[in-house]
Image (cartoon, rainbow, N blue to C red; front, side, top):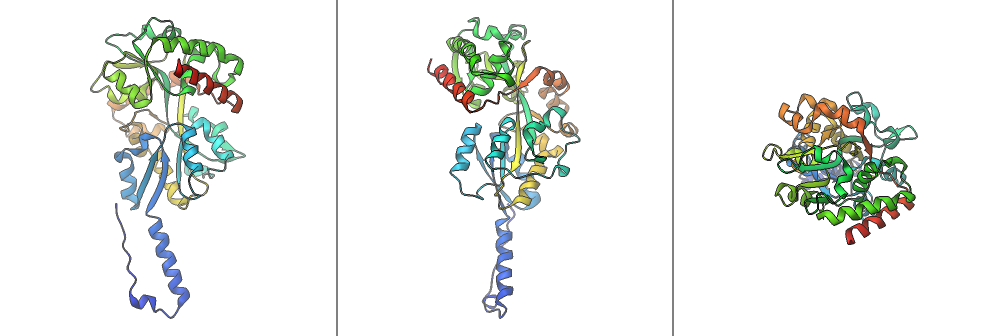
Length: 361
């Protein structure tokens, strides 16, 4: 970190012009404050390879707090003081929820790389409210099926319903996040994630319980990735390139596929807190993350790899990295994937109840 040190001499304190002295102190305080930026993020933003170039360019320290799941993020915000946070990374479908809560500030659309954003990632219905842009997509991928190709073939994974048929009992793990996994099952059952109703949940729950009967474990990103990487399981339900892409160099047998029925697409977005004490610096951070260099670093973060939202990252990524991310296949994948379910309060509570029963089964 580059730090600027200030000293005020006895002579400074005896300045006859009190107004000038106060102005000087206020200016120095502002500069000292500007040396830190506080960001509430997903784990991929904690990679020093991503953060340090920004810190060096602006002479600041970026303080990062990692969370997983929008509910956990909102809980942190509720327990914080206004101005504690400057930058927020959030699930793309939950941006309207954050805007309604007054958490996010408008962003200047003309300073963001919309001309090179993958069109499907614009997500205007989620990011723009009353003509104002409040967040922008930064990274995306798919909750689908990861597998060890030494023991399982892509053809085995073509029909998603086989996952809960009992054919792979004791050979699979499940990612512990109710929205994508229940969304996947809905897709496998021929339902539209955008149109889910409480009446659809019994069929989804029946498939979930059958899936649990075959599962060796249910865990978060790290434990799920560990389970398939160590050979504890051969299949990860809810996995995808974010689990396997960063490991393909050392473990080329780890693969992922989108079943015939489709998959669920996730996307993460970034925005600036409405009560940020450093709104200009926070915007610079957003612009850095969306730059080709920032996008390439984010896409290949040590926590997990996934596709950058800005296609201009292709000018920075290596051919090997683009192959691991399946860059050339994205048009077909995007066409076959549905967004996460975005339930209202009633449906969300019912889905969480189903997931609790699944975990307890």
